[in-house]
Image (cartoon, rainbow, N blue to C red; front, top):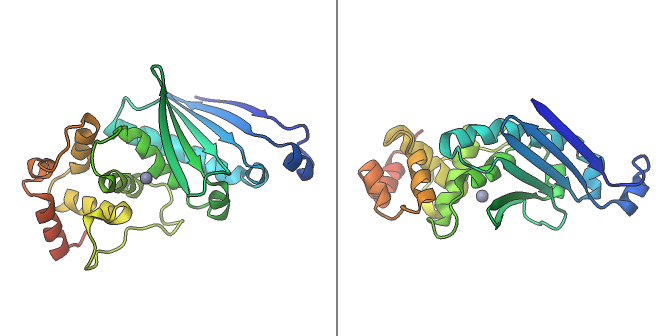
Length: 237
Ligand SMILES: [Zn+2]
């Protein structure tokens, strides 16, 4: 079932100049099944030009987030906030905070990027995996957290081809610590050639804060560096 409430906090929605001069923000709340997405826009240009990409982002969220949650963390937050943030200068970033026992997970999106690259909707897929991960502080290395998020983009992405996103082939000089797509490809290889579902197991260890250097040997029978050597010697996937 789909519920939509909408409020547009502007005095005039017909004249663009009026929107630009009086615009503060607009907010939608969409609920489907167990999940609610609150979509807040603070960018006047996005308010005018962003309707299509906004809908694509909402559609991606409801396709991808429940699927990621079902496999990795069914207890993940049922309420997520997307914030179109003209002050955020990267592409997107996810911030989590707690107010008493209420956890708030907010993904900040750069409106200029989303308007320029409206096909890059799987930024959503990567960012909401960070919410599912829910590792907190000091759970494991940065490269692994980001590698798993890009692995999720590869596995669950709704239009990676349309945005020109892919994992680069292995080449000499890479390291698993390169993070993002390079680490993601290593994880895909590991699942295909070594240990099925190893990402699910790594993710569980990271969330439980039981991950350490010995985790690789425990899950795959080999150390991380030995796994990488095998990968470098035969990186086909
Ligand atoms: Zn990330």
